[in-house]
Image 1 (cartoon, rainbow, N blue to C red):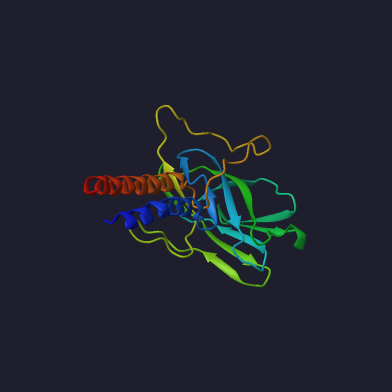
Image 2 (cartoon, rainbow, N blue to C red):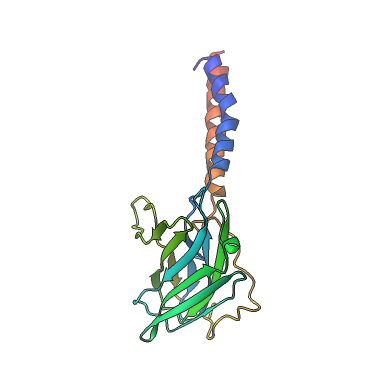
Length: 221
């Protein structure tokens, strides 16, 4: 490697690191947290980003699966928004949130969160919540695509909750969450995970490559 070429690579390393840190997460409708302990009740938050540059989000409809079925749900009041819970037999089928006015809609570049308490949860497995997001221009984004392990993430993945078995030291809750005193869920990225470890790994790789190149140059000098 020539000294000039190495200097160009070393100069580009900071820019590559900044690019990795600045890469935005995909803005999906998600359920947070995306894991819960089986057997009891859990507080869940549906996070809704507005991806359109020109239209606002004016409706969120979340559909609950028939298997597993949920017999109980409570909804935390959301200022500026109304909701309706629909039942199908003995199970919760759907919740629809709508803004009380155009001013309360989720504007471009913004997101909002809607909280529920749900249960009883199954002992283990996964729960898929299909969601429809309606915009002020009449368009509808259907967050219903299944995510398959080992395959690329679909364009519009459905929110998924993973249920883990209750451990000996973590007994499940036996009653619904009291929404009036429960703090909001901790913030994560839109896909429920943090991208910081990935960015740090990329930075470390760039630094390692630069160091190896410099060693080669010093031996040839």
